[in-house]
Length: 236
Image (cartoon, rainbow, N blue to C red; front, side, top):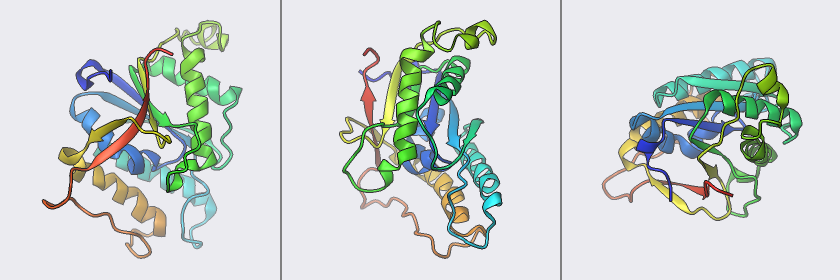
């Protein structure tokens, strides 16, 4: 059974790039914060491979994308956004990243987490970016066994005083077999705004709408909007 939102005090979202959460789970996050859940974003990469405008210096892209992500998060009432600044396209699910994520889990102490699925999916669109799958694998390894094991990354406990923490449940983005659906109809208007804040400026670097696809708003004739996730049971 999925925990009711009223049973969740804190949630941690771990994604690979700025704007991942806005594209894939903005409506879900809007619903969570609307019920009082304190949501933290952790963005693993600096996004320096993003953008479409060759006139924008590569060195400026991380700062632009960070500012966009912070603005987009604020729209959904997410006040805590952490950036780990790994190079875009170079995320690996190794020990250093697992330690960074274990530290964050023990700091935030979330009941619920949302991250990328580590599994390859043949369903369409950009689920299979190597950074996405690496982010999912590293996060799942940090959740189990690392975060709840006092002997994993012992410096976190011995030097930083971060006690073990067991996450209650995990939701996965972009998995091959989603088994949980969230109706976001009531929050769609709010969840649509972060998409604009990130996508429009990232396409052009100028705030213009040129070369950007437009997001459609719901109408009375459209079905309810839904976002999907694969949820791993709280015990495994």
